[in-house]
Length: 386
Image 1 (spheres, rainbow, N blue to C red):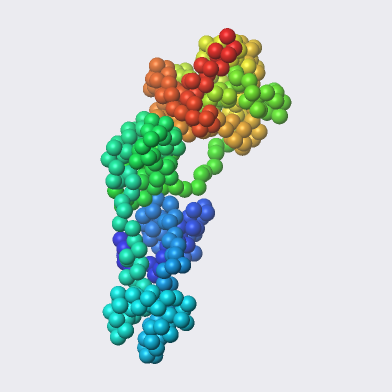
Image 2 (image 1 turned 30 degrees about the horizontal axis):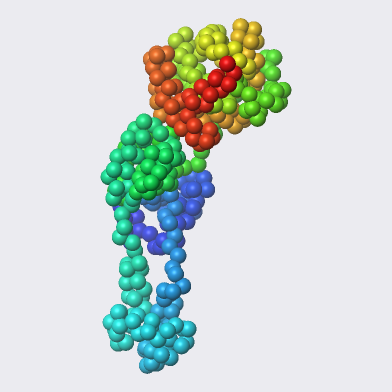
């Protein structure tokens, strides 16, 4: 089989091995060396399926296998009657008779040709669901353009069309329609609307290093009520960094409701500028929602003690290289990269624009909230505390 770039692959097993190695996190150069192919060939094989392993086919035991067709071919060459061949295979004589008749008769029967024909006939001509249902495809594309994740889209469509299964689609179907070439469903450019913006799946990379601060109160000293998310008012925070020394946006996520607030930093990301901007934003909240803030060890929080004095909000710091200890905030920062790509100047975004982005995020249903929207969850919490 010959493909683009002059690539020639000997078997499906080799292509499967390449995809397995890439999925396990091996570098392209190492994979190419391991299978004896060029790096360009490896990249092409992986891109053909967007990093998704093609579905393996399982043949029903009711169907003749390749080995059984070889036995039929040998029996015919030996002049055995069809009933004796069928008895040796443990099959009905009619099964063997139809097999032979459909593939040229006793004189022209060849096992490899019969097997090839069986594989071709078993292929399903059915097109992908998103390709054959324009109404469903338009609904999915509209929500992707609004930066909804495939999981959110799949859940919302079931709520909007509870009695119409033709308008239901799994999140995996959406991912495959975006990643796999040639499915003819969703436009390839819509991959930019995904959280990662990637055109195929790949292992996650490492996070950025942490700095060190004086007089830190560590995460281990944080009250238990923060850990189990039982009480609202505990926040996780961080900065997303852009191009240039003054380019950054502050992000705050309430742990119980996942409600997001974005903070413009027009004065840059110095410790004083961050403290001033965060304090102003935090003090706009009701008092019952100003309890604690969990941050990483970035030097932008060097004035954390003064921040606590001004706001009454205790600040706790994560362990080194432990971004999962601020999991809600890390997840949100990933979502925000759809709006604020890496390497761009973030200082050009006004607070009004950041508020609009936050409203859109807070208006998305979240699986961790039982598909409630963060804005609804926060409103419910505030109503209970009034």
